[in-house]
Image (cartoon, rainbow, N blue to C red; front, top):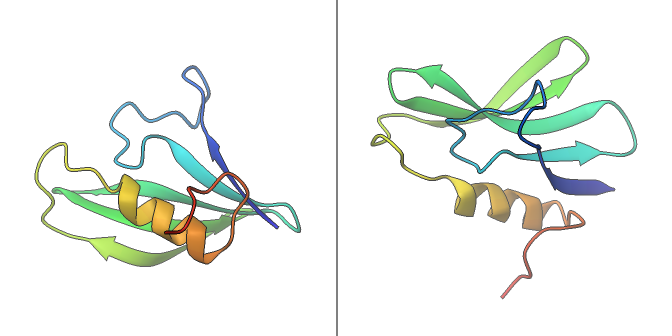
Length: 89
């Protein structure tokens, strides 16, 4: 089962420049998480992480400063049928 959660300010995972509003997907069946990460030069990616291994699976290049990817991250949460994801419709 996947859970969509929001990282709290003060957490070591909190990113003040997050383009996904500090949302993270957590799989309760293992150590797998999915989050958004800046990759520099206005690029951003969705990254799956398990332990010390990282896997990038969606790249967003040339984003305008401050551009939001919340809708894209929510759509991913919906596809995974995550608890806490916005309603489909």
